[in-house]
Length: 136
Image (cartoon, rainbow, N blue to C red; front, side, top):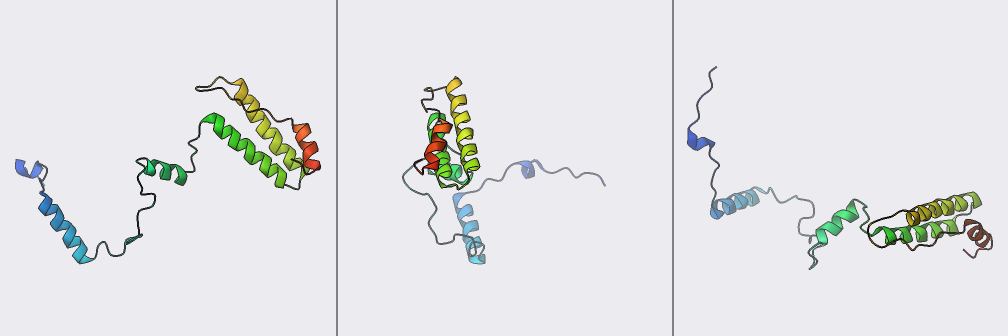
């Protein structure tokens, strides 16, 4: 079957007026196309005066940290210490402390952009003594 040559006007993009767009929206509303949408009638999450609210929301959803490396390292250290405090296993506590200590030492020995890391390494043996006395 031979191809039909389309008139040139059919190849041009359609031009729509604001009235035509509004008419399409009203027709969809009348058909009920928007009636059952999730979140209908609820405010948009995170909508406030912060122009980057959507970026922060996306970072939260994706569980991406937006902290500078030095601050993230401090947060990781604090979380590791808290987790070590709460564990009842000496082996698990030592593993947690050795892991974060190695991370801190690596960061302190690495040249990075921005300010250098000033997070002090953990003396694991001293921390384990404190852990045994419930003083960590």
